[in-house]
Amino acid sequence: MAFKSFFSFLTNKVFWINIVAMIATVAIIIFIVFKWMDSYTRHGQAITVPDVQGMDVKSANSLFAEHGLQGMVTDSTYVKDKKPGAILDQIPPSGNKVKEGRIIYLTVNTRSVPMIEVPDVADNSSYRQAEARMLAAGFKLTAPEKITGETDWVYGVKYRGQMLHVGEKVPLEATLTLVIGDGTASSQVEGDTLEDYVPPVQEPEVQVDRIWF
Image (cartoon, rainbow, N blue to C red):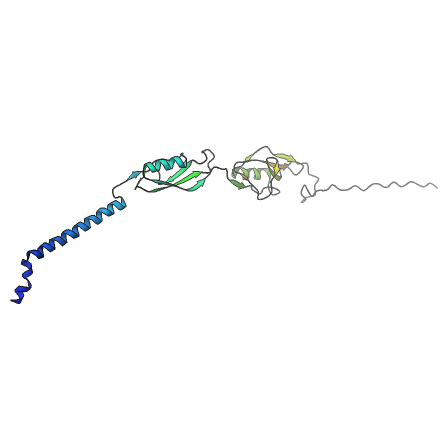
């Protein structure tokens, strides 16, 4: 009798109503959670990244805003043939599919020409060696300026008429002038520089009058 009483709740309608209500509640909660996750992660939404290369940052950000995206400048470099402030690169590239609100990282062209150090070629290079190093560094060269000295030996570098010192910086692609010897210092003592050379001093001849006896 006690055993039958224990399982009598199976025939109770209220019990089954509560079970169904619990199952329905759990199902509704699961449904709401999944819908919220889809909304939060923007599942199924994709935006095509527009091409902003060549544009200025302000115009690019306006275009990004129309597409629900954001732009951020993270790097800059110098390209001579590009407009200062123009966008050179973007990550992700144009045409990629991204979610709304994605940040697009931008690289822009610098507004000022970078300053770089002039190679140290004075008093340690021939004209040909110095010319190769200057051109490789991105500088332009005028015709060399010649002074008294060893043939084609580099004695200095000028920028806008001023002699440069070791370690000085000038704008990239600046036009420089190499100061070289013209080959008229053959009488120099070997090992001396042009500045150190001092012509020998001629002793004055002492005239002695002859005494006649």
